[in-house]
Amino acid sequence: MEATALRKTISLRISPALYEHIKKVSTKENRSINNYVETILFKVSKFEDTMKTYSEETGNKIIKALEEHKKGETVKITPETLWTI
Image (cartoon, rainbow, N blue to C red):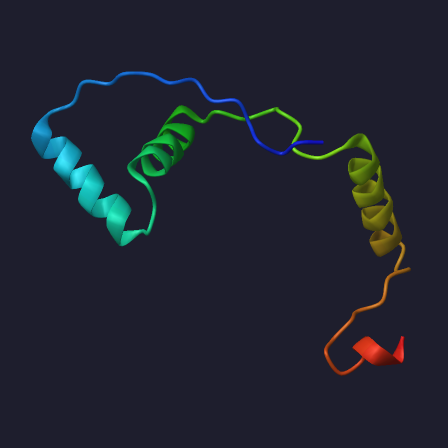
């Protein structure tokens, strides 16, 4: 399953000063302007992306692993024990 999400291109009019501020902040956070603005919009709009980003099989494996963990059926793996299992 392809993990890329569809995107909608939009035009947005903002003041040059706001643009420069966003550019400066996004650069400090090592993000693109697009990524920075999208992240802010997600937060302030409380948007929840319901798009699946993994396959049904992977989701089922995650659920099974969580159930096993709750029952104490999992093993903690550390660098020291990695090769002893």
